[in-house]
Image 1 (cartoon, helix red, strand yellow):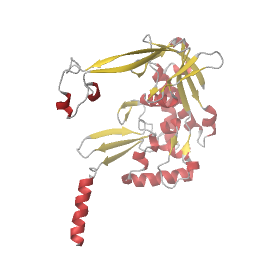
Image 2 (spheres, one colour):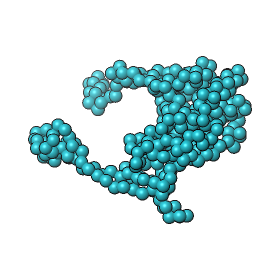
Image 3 (tube, one colour):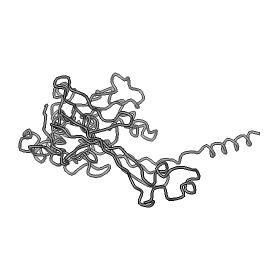
Image 4 (cartoon, helix red, strand yellow):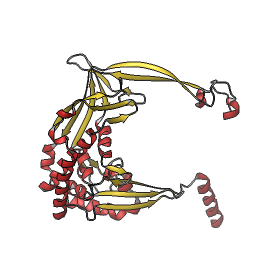
Length: 332
């Protein structure tokens, strides 16, 4: 599957992805001399696609009750609890939370054994088909050769603008607590002489760069050839194909709110590829194939594997020094 879909911005201008010390990714096309700018990268769009399946942290949307994934509940030293899952964590099933936490050693050993015995595709699909779709690298799992510890993403998408022109702008951010800028005692506030801007108050200058473009396009590629070569039965391959299309259909059914000052939508929804227009129909087909995979024993049962971790308070150097002193006294 390969589609190029025309998008339009809902604001007169847009702000593409940018990075500290790098700025925006702009290049001049050697074919026509026009500027190209990456609005959203493959990695970033993978995050947006995964978000379509998450109802709330640690919980998949309705209709995917048969799709396996890992849920993790984390309690910090203060007793605060939060939930997350392999649908949303960086590196998905290969997250350090799942692959490095000492408390999950039995799970890690079971996963390594499954990968070595049945292959990375089977082992990953069994526990989280979404992770197989977006690719995993089990770099933190002990006992795996790097050659068998990773599988590339099967679904890629990127948003690029053609004929892009930048608009440089700027201004000042005003702290409402100190409307007169430097008219307060900074030295008394922070204990040293400084300007209001240096301590994050008063009038703070900033630089702003937005863009306009002749054309904005979303390019999508699903590696059907690699899916066909996976050592999986056909119903499992169908799950991957349908899951990719379902996520894309959900993503395109609403404006793409990629970041502040970057909101896009499909220019001509009626011209979307037929396979991406009806999320409900895709979900129904996906559910059928998930049920078939369950019947074949290809999926974890129960689908959701839940873990809980309680984080210990970090040891401070002072506490460590005190403990060392006590040991020295006892030894002496």
